[in-house]
Length: 302
Image 1 (cartoon, rainbow, N blue to C red):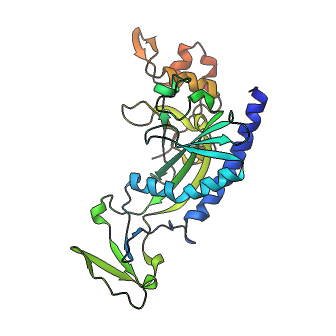
Image 2 (tube, rainbow, N blue to C red; image 1 turned 30 degrees about the vertical axis):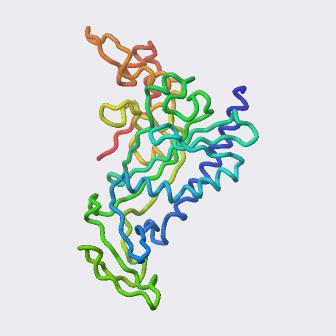
Image 3 (spheres, one colour; image 1 turned 90 degrees about the vertical axis):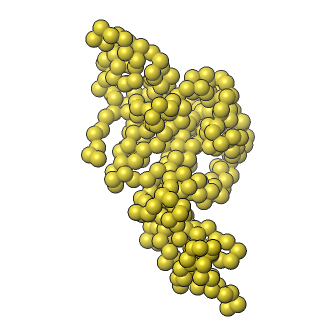
């Protein structure tokens, strides 16, 4: 596919994804900004609240918005293919119904605000399929078959609640009960709290920000999680929403080359061999100090 056609499909997909993301807050929120999901319900109409553990919240959020994602894909003429295995990239592959050469990768990234200004994600591996772009190991389709790689970002605020499922509560909601339903006081050894309305149960998260971003445009030059080979995002929320990442002025080619070589390429610095794990070092290694001013940096007070 020629570059003009590729850019046309990318621009159309990104515009549609931006519009879709802008509508999701109303879908998942109550009128006061709380998450509309209150918990799980059993056949006895007991509501079990959710812990604020990020893995639990992330999975339920994905399930919550998935029907909307399918409707969105249908509305723009794409099929959705789910990752065959849990640890495969990406979460969702969008394939154009009329031209299966047009593929886009979409990962759903959820996280909570750290201090009203910062949040961060991991953006996928910089090893394996990222380096061997014509291979299909741990990826739905080879990396180079996708015209673009995108994130649907979800940022939220957590209520101050325990991450432990043992600290969750059980409610019986009067408005859900039929006249013949009997009040339940306990489930096992756990007390059941009676409330009049479902909305009176406190949601574990609130105040959502949804945004769409091309992966390379929100990437930093730092790994995202410990010793694992994951690309880290920038952490300023405004910059995330505006795709103002470390590489955003340099371009995708520099993002690709830096992360393919991250921790593998070595330079001599002050007379000693140093593994390259900083973008400034990489540009110096490549003899492109003239590009240092194009690295987008921002110091956020934490």
